[in-house]
Figure 1: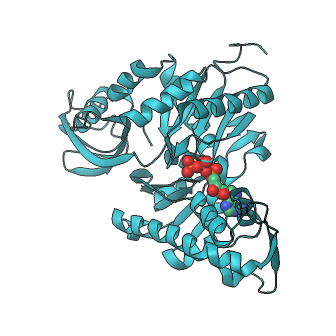
Figure 2: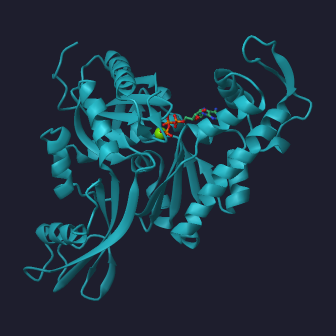
Figure 3: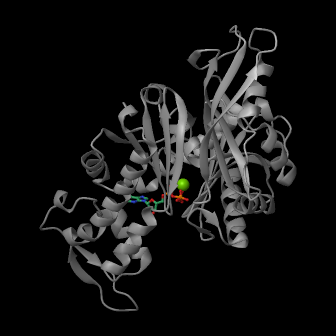
Length: 407
Ligand SMILES: Nc1ncnc2c1ncn2[C@@H]1O[C@H](COP(=O)(O)OP(=O)(O)OP(=O)(O)O)[C@@H](O)[C@H]1O
Ligand SMILES: [Mg+2]
């Protein structure tokens, strides 16, 4: 395998999840991107989306990278990395500047966004994204692209996403230790949104929830722009733990039972169906009604959806979600979750897999790959902006000043 030969023309994304670490390599083409390599490795070094074991996480990254490189037939040197976890905080901010030459130019937009991010961010937090929501020129509100417009005063509303400094440093450290430079970081639910949401959904208003293993990551779009992000500390792992305890079975068997026979609504399964449940510590396996498994799962599924409901209400945006709720992430694959979601959230709910991709699409067309595919798309969009690859602290300093996203 040659190193470097395609480095300038390929994009790679790294999703450091709570249950699996995945690497996807893509080859941009006219109007889209082709997946050319995919690698995954189980993840054991994370808790609630935060790295707690550097060596184990680094090993898994290395394995996933090797697998993806082998499939793609090329080495990668740098990668776009997802950030998630309970340490993420976000808030809105505003900035205002005088328009220099009576007509808005790119430099005015840069200045107003800088003014909007000139807020006190605590020393233990790093800015990950500054996402412009909309602009106002003099008294005219709701402008999405102000360049070329005339006026005297330019105002910007932005959504700022920050992460804990230590948590981000640990992500950087693991990636670098695995032999990769970082092209940039992206909030995981922002990446997932790029992979699964349509422009119509974003325009009409939509809440996307990526239900992973350890966390469920929320992002809300109104009028095409990001207005709210948050991370809920619940995911599929909690459902598996309940099954392990409730059915007194090893964790691995609980995971299989959940994925194969689980359902969020016990009333939806055949009441005469039975399943074989492995015993713990060499005990004999038992036969249990499938409905019982689902009765164990049901309260946790309800809790996850209630958390999502509370979060949407907390955002104050419930009435603006014309496109309802979109669920993705491995945890969204639980049978019956969509039906339960429509009932509890009282709005349309759909399950989404990554779209807009070509190449080895079969390997990644599952909700668990939304984040990694989204990282590819994010990388493709930002490729031109980041021709120079920087890593570690130097990179962190750069994004503090200039990491501005236009979504
Ligand atoms: N068919 C299925 N039915 C129910 N749950 C499933 C199914 N397939 C996968 N899952 C669950 O999805 C979860 C993993 O999802 P995903 O791969 O998106 O998480 P992750 O990215 O590793 O974690 P996180 O995003 O929280 O850091 C696991 O808890 C797994 O049990
Ligand atoms: Mg995930």
